[in-house]
Amino acid sequence: MRLFAAVVPPPAQLAELAREVDRLAHLPDADRLRWTSRPGWHFTLAFMGEVDEELLPDLGARLGRAAHRTAPFPLRLHGGGHFGRAVLWTGAAGDLDEMRLLAERADAAARRAGVPMDEHRRYQAHLTVARARGRTRADEVDLRPFVAAMADFEGARWQVEELALIRSNLPGGGTPGAQPRYETVASWPLGAPG
Image 1 (cartoon, rainbow, N blue to C red):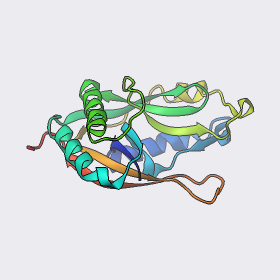
Image 2: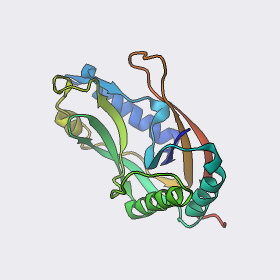
Image 3: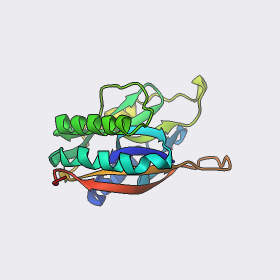
Image 4: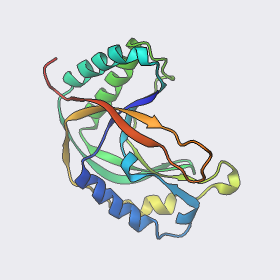
């Protein structure tokens, strides 16, 4: 199964982001972007890809320990940015050092459980809100106006209290515009005793 560790913002904060994205969807060239599915909005901490089911018990135990060693921390959705001309995202503000530590612990937990992880990179908190529709240079969109429109976006603060393990179910059948479905496989409270 295709898995990743994540922080999922609460419903009220997701509603704030939805209002911001609805506003962005009226900008020029917005129809050239594929807006991500709102039920799938999350901050990926460690992407694991395909994971053998036999690794799940050890992976779960290790992720639980990673969560227990990490104190709850404040976070809010904040501003926006882009990766090239392909991905538009909103960022985070708050205790990003603690979030980065949780991401590193989730990555290490997966590695120790035997999940082959990609090359380790410094964690950058981002929640993807849109992607370019196609894969060719002609499909590229200048994302700078969208980022500028998000510059003043400040979501309400919340306390991150949980690490989630999420399964990504990729769409089948080649349906245009189909998006992955996400389901939480397990979750662990932050800072709880092991």
